[in-house]
Amino acid sequence: MADEVALVTGGATGIGAEVCRQLAASGARVALCDVNERDGRQHAAAIGATFIPCDVTRYDAFADAVATCESTLGVPTFVHLNAGIMTVPTGDAFLAIEAVSLEQYRRIMGVNLDGVFHGVKLLLPRMRVKGGAITITASIAGLGVLPIDPLYATTKYGLIGFGRSVAAANASGNVRINVLCPGVVDTGIVPDAFRTGAHGPMPPAVMAAEAVDLLRNGANGEVRVKLRDREAFAVGPTDLGA
Ligand code: NAD
Image (cartoon, rainbow, N blue to C red; front, side):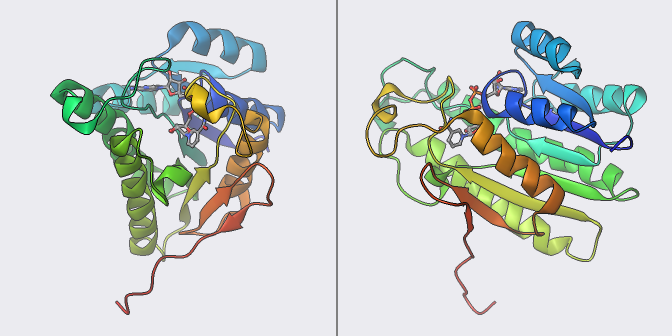
């Protein structure tokens, strides 16, 4: 595993932090990228990763982070585009769609969609020489309905379509692109309403293990769902005969 380099966005806390820990524990050199410098630096130091400050919404900042990763660790073999937010900060009341401000709209689109586009645009061409995999974190919200946060669902539907389509466009290459759809995971992003009941949260380590398996073994174009009490399973696109 000595030649493996991994870049993870949203690696300071939650699922991404666990992905960084598991990859570092398996011997990969890990670039832990996040806007949260305090938690990111602390976690990176604890697990033997390299913290690289990165706001995924800003293309130039993401490009700087990729350049830092390349010069300090090498070109990534594995990339987990995982940074994501909901429309309102955790703990705030969810808003009816007409009450969402333009700033809130642009913020969630910027992190959840622009951030993943920036990552693929910057990293896919660099990864083609060595080969590897890019895993995008979407959500089961991208396959169902989420009345409390329609914009979050919009971004996650978008990521599933984006990941599948980029995977198909690059099927002949040596970089696999796939998508993880977590159920509810016990992290800071989860609304209190989702913390109880039959669909209560899973430990981040369970979800991170699926992300690491997708990076290492997932098929190109695979969209994998993991719910708390079920084995992970792949979901296919609707066949429109295209
Ligand atoms: P989290 O809040 O612990 O992790 C999100 C990370 O993204 C944080 O470290 C945060 O600092 C980082 N981040 C936010 N904005 C950023 C930016 N502009 N640039 C770089 N980093 C940024 O929550 P989590 O649950 O670990 O979320 C990880 C991913 O999993 C997200 O994409 C989320 O939508 C998705 N997800 C989570 C759940 C769940 O139940 N926790 C379910 C489905 C999908």
